[in-house]
Image (cartoon, rainbow, N blue to C red; front, side, top):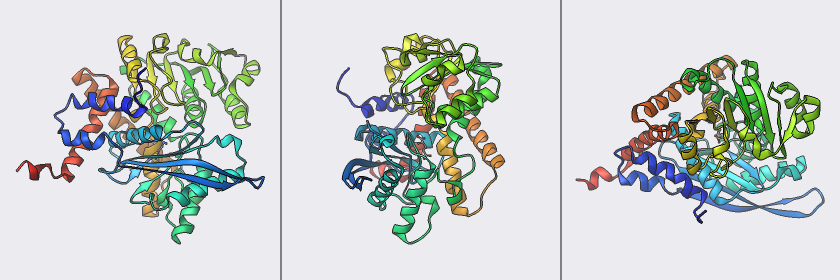
Length: 421
Ligand code: GLU
């Protein structure tokens, strides 16, 4: 492996898409670099009286199409490159879905599981204190991401309101319902992916009952398991950060989720569920129609891509498949439904939350689901058609779809016509 960064590797997808379109060089120059990334240190008081300092970032990658939008991750391995790459992906994700947003992302390098609830609250509030002038309902709108949740968004919203002396729920999404959160935001990432697969089931060869393997059992993985299970699919394998389990005739999803919510790991529940514990690395290789990476970046690489047996990969995580692994999957005839489309349900319902906050009128769950379904199907169908017309992968098609919108917006803002005389 060369010493290129995660962002360099992500930009391969931009260049690939650009090669299919008549894109002005101005557009690529603008999208190749993050517009601004702020780095700070959050100094918080721990419960034992000591002080501890944590690295934190917020990146506003591109705001051509609207205020920057994207989650905040709390993870011990977070880096600036990761934050900037995730913000790049958000830029394209919002464009794929035609949301009036640019892309952003934030992170704190911390293991949140090692903090008490009060320490976590102080850290969340410190984040908002540090970035209060970066964010704003018309500037940059954070949301949950890996290891952050509605409770944390609630603390951050409250802190922002105290700093500004007003109540601006639209500054952050994924809030608790009581503080202006939207119904349907908690399962939105999984539900969006679920609607997408169901809509394209015939084209994907996934009609009827399917078997599913899920890598990662956090918010997206759990809700996807639940939705797929209720829809008559068999969840044959799941993993979390500590292990994986396999049961070819289907796992009891309700019990798994119950155990997970009680703080247990999936492998610890194997015996009572009648499942076998398998090495985490083997999860992607189990016999299943659909493989759902729902954990972190670059889990499927040149080293393991060839072992995948699934017909379809649904990327609920951001960036789980490397560009080189993509080629292996394409050669094997495996269709990858790419992150910037497949997991866009989360930010789409975040958009609904922001709209509801601004209009001060809230929709019922039925309306949220209907709107999400319509948008996933509309953009999913458009991407699918591009893939067929141009004989490219679904990922390339999604980038082409997004880049077309970004290019139109960049050109509409730009000075290029002036210089072109
Ligand atoms: N963190 C989610 C993502 O990566 C959601 C972002 C949002 O709702 O703004 O898409």
